[in-house]
Picture 1 (cartoon, rainbow, N blue to C red):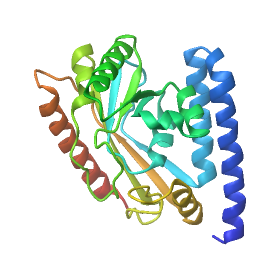
Picture 2: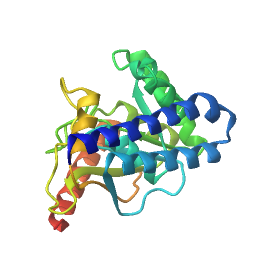
Picture 3: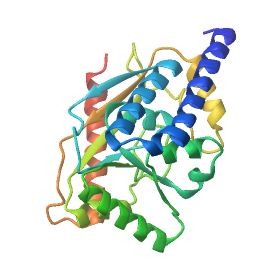
Picture 4: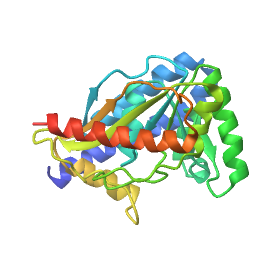
Length: 251
């Protein structure tokens, strides 16, 4: 793609993003949850279209809560992909709330915030998550705690998975992959890790071609007597296996 074409796409992405910020700050607080969920899903699908990322869904996403989605984490595209598929609320690090514009957008979407360095705050968020699950919400967490290059699944932190145990709610493992839509090979165009900037990641995404976000949903499962650490390890193994199976099916 030429730089001129990418610049035009960047402008369209920016205007759509600003529209989302306006909705998150002004409109979402006045809407019912079903109305908000529909608008978020529509906005996320349109944003994926504008950044040039196709969405491929494998398996059956949770149609309704209570459900805790547990997924590996590669990029900001993951959040758009999950929002485009099902009405979920994310748990994010506390400083995201104060990011200019982005904070307004994600707060309007019902995001829960956690101070990762504070054990007390983590317990507070687990209690809020458990209550949200009891209320019938779909929540989504990235227990790796950071993004990766997508080549493997990093070790899982188990703290937030306690919410599903406390609420006696099921967990659905989700495997995310970003690939070239034709070859099926992994792509790092959308990577956002280490010292990489969000703007740089978005620009690489716009300049790339035929990107596809593959979202694979596993079967929902219950704790079945496992503690949070054992369950986290099992979920990591399951997500790793799901990614491998999907890679074998790719062209």
